[in-house]
Length: 316
Picture (cartoon, rainbow, N blue to C red):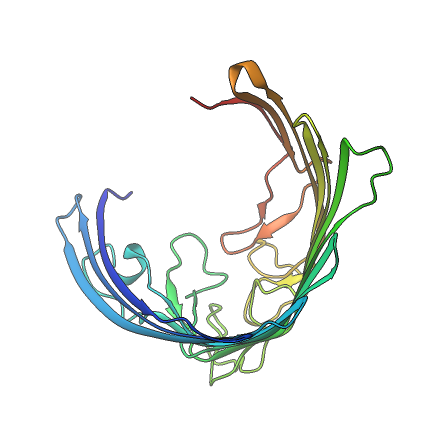
């Protein structure tokens, strides 16, 4: 049992300068983050506090001739740990540094036609200290730990196409797609397994848990001139590992093993009620009520079942 009071105070400031010379743009920036943590266990009176400060630089470049834009950037990544992760329930401070990385990207945005736009980006993220579960199969109460160096590298692409007006000018159809390919997501430094009983096993080079190689979604959207709209969406996730040993076969307790890929369907409908300045909406998530595994950290955690929401949004 826990009865905790957790407090976080965060201050940040940034400087950014946009320099434009013709079709070339240069944007350097610098951000400062300062975070203070406090945690009080009301059951035993144990208390702890700590703080961290981080400078975050970044630089972006863009070149925009005619209908396309080429862009590139390098930025410092930063994510502070949560209160419950950096301060223990006994009042002690966990030696858990913030998540730091250098992020690189090179991409292209193209207006290929009046009703067609596409974007593609190659990226690389070099983490100096990625935060992962201390025991991926550690069960309830498992904390987080610093995984050290990790590497992520891949491609993102997206597109949007307004289809021909087959049903007349009052009806509009769009097709929207997005895809992520992540061939590299691995432990890059010297790293031993955090799975109980396997702490002597070297996992350097193994794929990171919960890092699917492919993610994708596609949506068909409809809009009527009077404001009625609807869309249906398919979301695809490829298989992924549930632990740093990259275990394939599931264990009896469900805390290790491969997480199969899946495709989930969602849909929505909106209809305006003009005199009331309101909109009726209907949303359905996991349309086919498919049961999939989404997590193994504390045993098999299933996805949410079919979720239907019906309501009224009113502007006043």
